[in-house]
Image 1 (cartoon, rainbow, N blue to C red):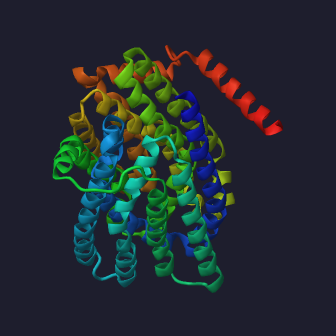
Image 2 (tube, rainbow, N blue to C red):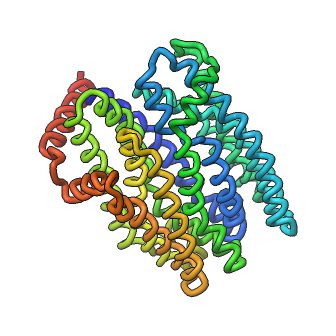
Image 3 (cartoon, helix red, strand yellow):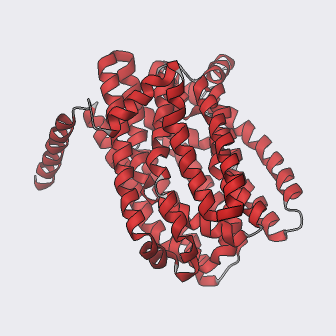
Length: 443
């Protein structure tokens, strides 16, 4: 299991690093080319898209992996059923989104065009379900190849747009293009490696809905309080430029996302499998996962806080320096945000799924109230602080109020203090793995 975890995480990190290096330069050129206003439009519309994306996900990311681990003989039917469920949901969400964007921004033609173009991606998000199958098998190598291939194609498309000086609508299509391409590659790759053919089962539909029900609503709540700030900035300040500045700030805050995401994607099946086999190992792996996510993010946040102005000027230019304080504040929300994702894995293992929705509702209420009072006074800096404080409350404070989730808060405290995680053994294991890799390369 340790070998599979490290190998799988290595592939995930490799894919994310390749995408980050390519996307780093293309992204900078794109943001500079579009400017705060057009960049703000794409992110404003993207906030709505993210809400519907959470609905289409059906909260299956953790539940379906648990299903694959628990019922390996039904993986074809589980996967096929989930894809059908998400595709139908995607069609419905596309229609609702188009009606919504026409109602809220009917007087802004550019926003309408960008919205219609980005809506193309919604039904194709169903194909992302294949990624969870790769995660459950700890063979994310093939998912990484698919994602990286699609990313390179979309990057070349963006280079073409930059060279030919296309408008914001063309850049909006790059988001939909990425989803479509990676979905098609997932499908072809699965067909070559499948053990079971895709199927559909009404019984599995009911089983998935029972498991993911709380997560559907919870994911909606998470996206609402995650994207609410951009929407409220636009509505309260009436400025797409402010949305662009804030989005640039949050992009810098999330540049490290590839590392926690890779650890979480590989750690999720390891923790779930340990829960099924040995309770003490499960507790240890949980604390180790929390510790890794927290401290990696914490170190990054310190660096961003110190060098925020330099980073902003280097990446986006002087036009975005007004977002400096937002970067410094927002950098710390990531330290707790990934603990929230790990918490959901813990809740699934402990069969406390209902708390995902409860905590998410608390998060939405907290974020809305703080944004409502802080944005008019402090602008985008107020939105950044609201996001940070919401993550602290949802991922650490609120769970300590309930008897069923106090153990989670205790695990988080142990992780932050690096207590009861057998840190020495972790370093010894990593040292051995690095030596083995070096030896194989020399050989």
